[in-house]
Image 1 (cartoon, rainbow, N blue to C red):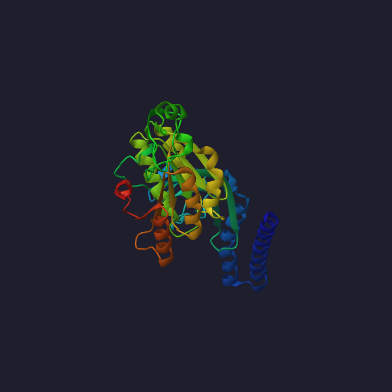
Image 2 (image 1 turned 60 degrees about the horizontal axis):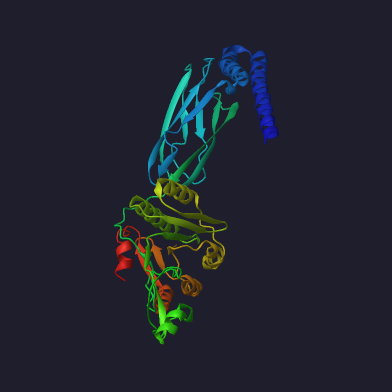
Length: 399
């Protein structure tokens, strides 16, 4: 590329010499007022082009000022560009092109200015940013002579990165309690039983496990007695995000951000498990720092899950099982998902699945069939639409 540009510069320089020579030869041989007028009229443009050829654009000091490095999706920011130089060479025009990230679009990223003898030039443009990590590479300056014979270009390496967090909604908070209970009844949000805390004994009932039988009490009373375990509760959640590439992925990320912000804000504890080409696990904690860690991940996360995420979830999340309710956020309910979650539910218990959709869309016939199948198997699936996340907790508790 550099060799091509060098060849182009030499070609333009040669063309300028040829045109200047032709005009001079024409004036010498033709003579007369018109011929010399053409030569002297062309001469200033040629001299300016020669001077511009040797004027170093690298003498410019270029600075880009991004006011904020952390933003929320949909926000507008103003970018300031400042050009400074020491030698006030008269530049007729200057094209200033800011090389934007590929996923950001703005009509003002390329601007035409007329510097003249100015030593300092200030430019500004605004743009809206979408969720993600955006990286600016550099700024390109382009100028030339008035006849368009000569063209000069200079690249300034100015790498800057901003992080845009997802949008979120304020949810009406209701604790999702995960209970550790005794007996045969299973709470919808049960995760597992803690059999180490025995509070009392009672008469054996059909459905009680053999391991719960208190043999000493049975021998003493001459009837089958069962241990009764202490009831414990936990508001902890493990949020699992499905990163399948669907039209609803950005809305799923918004809901995940809304859920995380609301729970941390109300003193809850949660962890995060993200399934894509790579698996991200963030242990259960509370406090503002946990929200910042998860939001940083949500800002950069991409829809790049290439295998059914439920298989990865069942395999990778098992070693981290804790006293928490699993909250699965997806945007596509399939037979594989229902079958995989059925296995996970039998093993662990408390689980909620949120099926997130964009505004104006609806659950298709196949999804409706699989949601009914999940309900028959005791799996709770709630469909939420963009802009209607506020009642996410109430929807579950009323089910």
